[in-house]
Amino acid sequence: MTPPELLVGTDGRYAREVFHQRHPTLVDRVADAHPYTAAQRAALRALLDESLGGVIGRLPADAPDRADWDAWDRGHFDRPWADAPFLWAESYFYRRILDAVDYFRPGPWQGVDPFRPMKDAELADPDLERDFAWAADLPAAPTEAGLATVVRAAVFGNRADISFRMQEPASAADPAAPDELLADDTGALRAALRTPGPVCLVADNAGREVMADLVLAGWLLDTGLADRVTLHVKPLPYYVSDATASDVDAAAARLGRPMDKRIAVRTHPFWCAPLDFRALPPDLTADLRAHRVVLVKGDLNYRRLVGDRDWEPTTPFPAAATDLGVPVVALRTCKSEVVVGLHRATVARLDAAEPRWRVSGRHGLVQAR
Image (cartoon, rainbow, N blue to C red):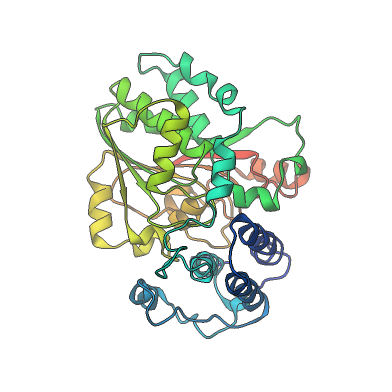
């Protein structure tokens, strides 16, 4: 039986923390990131107040994506935010931020990424050279050790999530505790790449994460494990640090490499939809199925792949994950409550030793369907 969706307003659950702890900090940081007008700042504050105790308002009639959101509505408009599914409501909250700062309105703020200063600060970090020094030592041959290195870097690169760090700062976890892969199906990925072919990577965050994704993609191409890579990114600024096409260009520049011509960057409106992958539109489904394997990056995409539901963590990953019609491998660090595919003993150990293990970002997953 499919478990219920996670809701925004359930006491004691992570979704409520996000709305009541992360979002107020986020709104303050967005308001301070640009010289916004008093009206824009007031609109941000009104959105926050609405989300904390009001009903879900609709987009303006002239919004360019109003028809999309009318189609994506599942009866949540004009009802309390607290009663809405976490996945739907969180996505819509970020869409409404764009309205508040006039992202779509003709004028000086049209097309200005409200999260750009936060993204730029991450790329300016002088520690990036040190953090990516390992990439220079990757083997030229398609070895198991090389694949394990680039996959693990892609998994834990997913921790580089600005919105996550607002709620779960690095100091909240034991700095001496090592990262831990709770599930590792890297062997299944290697088997899927036994015959070279096209690989699709559905990206998550900009900055450090997409830099690691580009290293992964480049290594697969250089070693012949892939003959081309398609990198799917968001069409709009989303979830603070989610990667757009311009973020990929910035990441490639920060790596000191020109953008690889063998990597095609694509997007689709669905990547900003508030729905899980069971609702993938036919054209996007066909695109994904044209690849030998689809790598699904990050926590949000994981929630969309298995469903943002109150899963029993021992539920087998293949039973929960949406059938995309092609082998799929999820690369993710645990930054929300949703997790499947774990052994009962692992869950018992983590529950006893680390109450917030599902959201700490310290634990990674490589899971294949």
